Length: 128
Image (cartoon, rainbow, N blue to C red; front, side):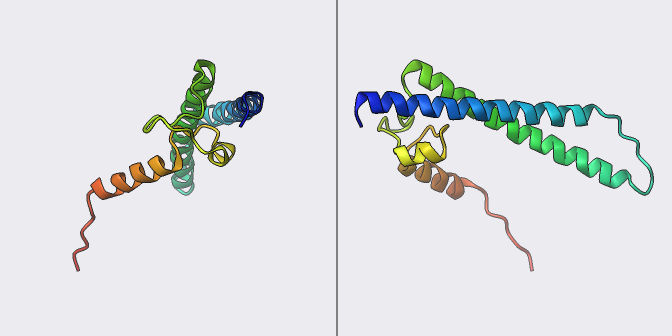
């Protein structure tokens, strides 16, 4: 990839990230407003309202993590480090960045980290 193509690619990715950052912020604002609403627990419908609040709280946590990933990618663009694997230092595949602009690892390293993570998770035992 030529320098101008690389610069153009990175700028396109920046624009995608900024657009997604705006969408995530809007959704977070909406969910936080819903969470501010007072819960009126009625015996018949209280469970569904509590369930909705718990679901919204979980969505907020996911979106906050997504926002952190986006902001991290934008910082790496500003530093000139965008598209470099944080684990091995090799370039991240362009196709991967097109699908996941906030990727911090190349596909090989990401798969290795996930494989190691699965291996280190405690296995649940099923007692029959």
